[in-house]
Image (cartoon, rainbow, N blue to C red):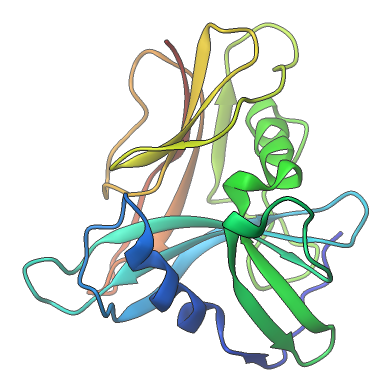
Length: 214
């Protein structure tokens, strides 16, 4: 169970992402984004050591490139993750836990294993800001047979991050650019759908991840 501490972070998660997002191939907003944390959920680390969060941020500058919604899976660790220097989003000082290393969770095996467990129904989405509270807005499904094998290395596209499933017949697409009100495609073998607040205050939802045949 993840214990949520209501304390200070320096810099904040949004401040870290404001510098990191414009370096991503799937980010289509302005170079100096005005970001807001808009939604998402958490997963529990079975060992209780690592924070696992699927965060939605919106870019609300109002310009021609603004008003996008982006899904950013993050892990928060108390020490650097070996071999993941390329995936480091930045470091923060946590008011209770001390230094924290924030990583793009697509490159953290703990997060990807947790995502597969969520799709299969072996894990439950947790509220972002409340300890030991399931997030009832998150929906998941899996129509496959048996447990999913592991995932290949993540590959970024201009809309998503994709993982080949080890059996060679499926691909897991984590939607980096979210489309409000969209639904999983009819050929999806599994999915995770979540919710967030749009800049105008309305609540919307869309698939965060889909599992499909190649």
